[in-house]
Length: 256
Image (cartoon, rainbow, N blue to C red; front, top):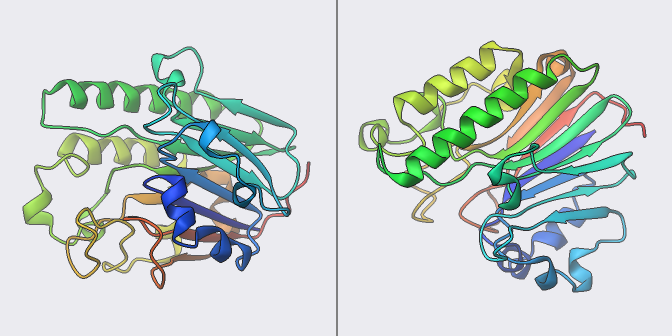
């Protein structure tokens, strides 16, 4: 089973750059997209509805920021939006497709800001809410694959210029500790299970792929799937946004 995730910097813009033509060549079972940057009314053209997929969109209430989507080859049993009873549920940050014993989530973490800023505090609140949700669902009899535009980098191997970025949102000590705690509580960074290279990046803030790379896009999976991970790659040959698609293959048979 192949799962692809991408933070799009605006889905219409990524589509203009050939995203859907490329996806047509990948034969992915699940495609998760974050940062749609538009309303669902902007996604009516045929190109957003590839014949091989069942698409589901969840845009932010303002129709301009955030937004997530999930494309499923096999029809899911259920689709869920939001993480349940939280103000962020209106901001287009999470959508989930459920199958018999496996769920796929497309999640977008809000931007941060300087320590103590309003943006930073809201981001921290969201991260705490996500962490509580991850712990709650560990008691369910199902496995999870969360495809994220996490806007977080975990270790020095995930940031090209650690000295420059050590005080920047996305690589702050508290954010890295958040990832430490999540990974210690029953989840796995799928890409890192099979690739330990320190030059694998998925986001370039300035759009220049020869410098200041970050690996902030990854698939977080429940620990029960650890030994099902077969292959992982960050695709950089074509550019669809300031982020690169993450491709992961799992030894899993998807059933409805």
